[in-house]
Amino acid sequence: MRNVTNILIVNLSFSDLLVAIMCLPFTFVYTLMDHWVFGEAMCKLNPFVQCVSITVSIFSLVLIAVERHQLIINPRGWRPNNRHAYVGIAVIWVLAVASSLPFLIYQVMTDEPFQNVTLDAYKDKYVCFDQFPSDSHRLSYTTLLLVLQYFGPLCFIFICYFKVRKLFFYHFHFYLLYTEFLIK
Image 1: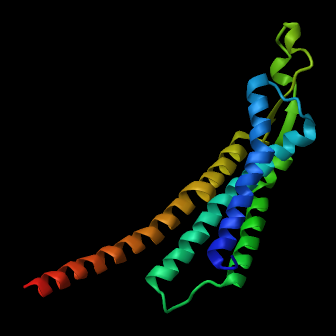
Image 2: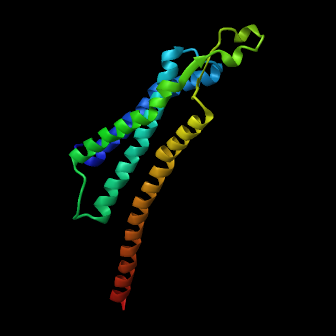
């Protein structure tokens, strides 16, 4: 159990479990009830934890791809060890927390959307949403998250597995040539 892959998979599992316990139930209830009932602390904490855990999950997948890449492409060269895995996990968590801090800062609970509604059913109801200083701040932050949580990791994982695939087909091609040579 004490190898790099298992350490990274445990970290991935922990972050996914965090989503299942801390995010899914609150999001489910919020979607069903159409207003926020969990208080201001959870209004700030829920999207923060969700962003942290998603970031940790995707970067854990990146580290797993890097480790597999190294083991297959360069089996006699540099290989990540347990210490590298723990350092990588620590860096991932610090990066995830830092990139998620705007949710703690700008997430607010307000009754503003319900103020002009005259139905009694919407009295004393609140919603939870992000209130950035300006639309350009929101656009910058969401673009950063898109690059950090999606495009960057996607490109990195794609390159790692593409190189593995390329090596596989290179060896497979020579295997076919070799077996063809033996048959003749």
